[in-house]
Image (cartoon, helix red, strand yellow):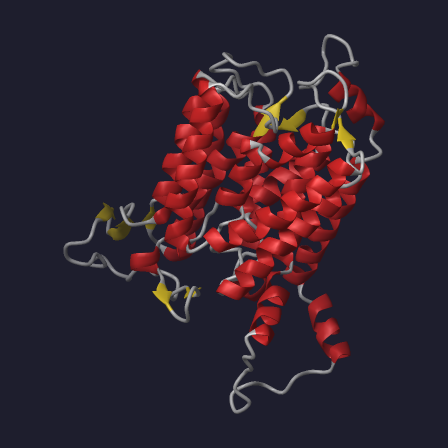
Length: 406
């Protein structure tokens, strides 16, 4: 779940080397009352003419939106998702309004908030407020937490921008932050288990798999998805063989052995994460080699954070946090990819390399880079702390009384 102009490959991005993309200069509105370009949509506000940017049918984000909306419909009708229509619409609306306002303020245009719509939909697809039941169509239970996740997501997008570009997948960092800070008493992520393998789950898996091919092919991310899934499923198999287990509110007793591997590695929620969240072209590595490293690195971090988690809540947050950590490392991943390809910067154009001490000092004085480090470290520390959260174990066992969270 993504949110950057890099999705719009035709009008907004120009190809460079194989698999890489670069952003054009920011859109700016011409000044003066006759600012509108003939034949282009515009809106006249008094003496001011404001260009209007409408959806482009070739934008891959429309494909992703179609997949997520289809899954939301299945969740509301046959998969018993514990999220209300009101929670979904409010979250999407908050993201859309903020993004539209910021774009208008910065660029003087009214643009279709494709990225923000995906961010809001992604948050509502994963986040759950304790006490919300399937069928509470218009419930606003816990809506403040959905709004908070939306605000954190867009703050990270617009304020944490080392080098002038946002580093984190907005919906991912917003979800990780609220799940860790607000905690399992009030919030939880969508279950790994979507139900018995009947027609509803099969339909959802079909939508995910077909949607993944449709979306990932457009942004050249299929190798990245495989680079994650192969080592991740192998490591989870090792954990299962070594006797690891976890507790989940939807299962009586610990889940171990083959069921441990099955419930994690074949979870529709894991596939959604890999195919539709990790694949954000704006925050993933850009080169084909870099994307392979990016996929493998996320798998290794996810497995490392999962290893000591005794609950489903901890496992799901570990998976989400792994992307937060690896997004912070994308510049290093790209550097490693260039070295593996034997590429070097042009000595005639490259600035002299600063000593390591000066580079570290410069980084420490850059607020955006400091924020990136703090977010990544906090994600690791907060996720690791879940392994020792006894209240969470009681919640997953359903032992906290009639008002049990989840």
